[in-house]
Amino acid sequence: MSGMAAVGPSPAGGAAALGGLGGSLEDKDCDLLCPVCFELIDEAYVTRCGHSFCYSCIGESVELHRRCPKCGAALVSRDHIFPNFLLNELVARRRLMLRAPAPQQNAVGAGDADRLRALLATEARHLALADVDGMLDVLTRR
Image 1 (cartoon, one colour):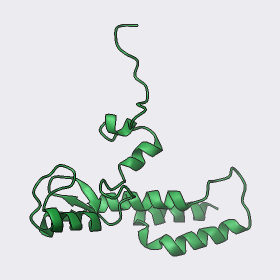
Image 2: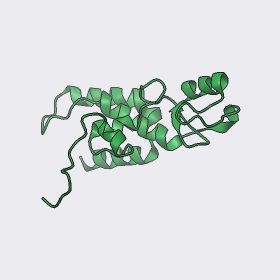
Image 3: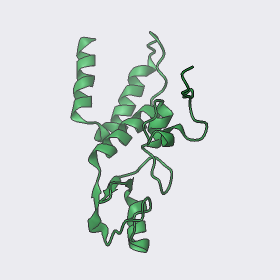
């Protein structure tokens, strides 16, 4: 060995050790969690200092403490928080992945079409135009 320590997964928060840039899906989920409620971010908003939270969590923090819960930067009013459209899209995609059943290789059952219809009916408002185009492309090939 050349004097450098072997780098392995950190037992206590691998994503935090890499500044939130972990390699596994679980590490990426950490980036989608609200640092206040520790749930998947619901209606993502970003502060002027660049931290993202659920709208309800950051709104309450602004009203009660007038500070960013992450770094303590002053947030005088709700005018200092803004919708985080990209993060909202990423969270919506992750929610779809969590709700979708695990794919079975080459096994298409009679209920698959019904599950797809139900998923589209409930999640259609969260789909981006690019996702709809991708689905149409897959369906037209079949």
